[in-house]
Length: 420
Image (cartoon, rainbow, N blue to C red; front, side):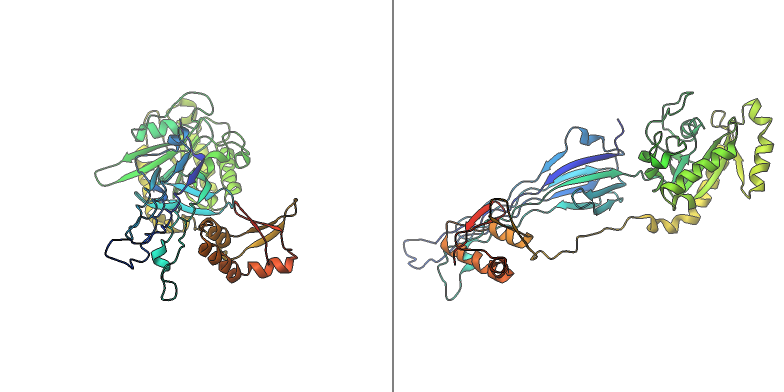
């Protein structure tokens, strides 16, 4: 089943812990510290698989977790890095962070990659803390925690030409006639419940990718009918084939209605190049009135093509016109690509709040990371953490807030007692 919106949970691997160890050999009386660094945690990486055209694979699995890094060893051995997790997505996938709503990436090119959850770095072993003044440090770092987030994946089909029109205009029949696609076709509205892709080969050198967009009705931009669920797929296309039902009561009204819906959903959609075609000219009742329809469009300054998707009349000429327009707007494709936004925050920023039970909560990227990477069982590591709090300005901020001796301070998952 077609799926073009999904939420997934990703979690990168935690870095391996650094080791506290001292070299002891029979004939080496002063071996010194030789605790190795921990390995880096694995990343969660989205990559474009050009063989996929839906997000349906995420029906079975929506949680992805990378491997943790291994701890450091003796003799200054670095732990093994955790394995990355590679998650395939179809081309045209837009990735957003659910919590912030910000765009993380727009995956278009084959094999394009995006790290959505970066693995934590490995903690440093005690060999890295040795100095001329402290030659036997009894401290190390724990591995940095991995990143955990919920992602919103949205698929916007990558097609050169989109086929639009009201329900029953013959879009699916047209796609089946010019490509090898096999969309569902029937004589009732909304036969097409999801977009279909097909490749039309006009000769050995000319190919064009077409997308059959489900029928649009009045109010589609606000979600009526199949609505805005599929309007976004048109945003990727550079040229539109606007197929009109020649047997409809008022083809001009259908044409105006669809263009209004496009503009209301996204003003840029209403400015896309269009090739207008009157379909079903094989029907006698359409042939009898087609000249009148064509003349009306001409009065509005619009050229129309006459086609029959069922009888396969005029289709080749229509496609060549779409390709001609495609060549004219090809240079504008970069403007259609979505920009990537990043959070512009300082990781050393922090916030202090008083909780209901009277405890103090200190929140911030740097301070919480420092707490998570501290070996609390080693006094030197605890003193280093206190120096970090002083450097970040947390101590001064707590004193200004009115903290008293014996108060509880919570940082991440740790509870500390404030002592002056």
